[in-house]
Image (cartoon, rainbow, N blue to C red):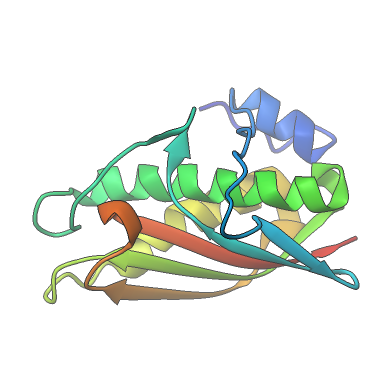
Length: 157
């Protein structure tokens, strides 16, 4: 990917990286975001692309660390897409907190490395507005056997 640090807007930086925010499909059971005042609560997002889950399995057994990092980047793009739905444009999004769930074996200790891939993307795209409080948690399983799920709290700026 091309470094996009010198471009003006978050949208320009994302475009310079060759990445587009995905379209989020409606779900009959939940909304992708809920806005309360200037706070935006983003539902847990899986690594979907074009309506297809990009991976399944458990990190540390049948999913490699590098694959999990790439899946985390896709999941965080879905979070950004939900945030843009809430506020209208990427430049108005500031990440407050990110919670990263990693379906992993009990002896896998690199959940923070998986989360860092998503954090890196947020900072590269949003700059200082992408820096956030963060928790990375290893879990026994996630919906649809996804290796990664990301939930966020954002604010409109």
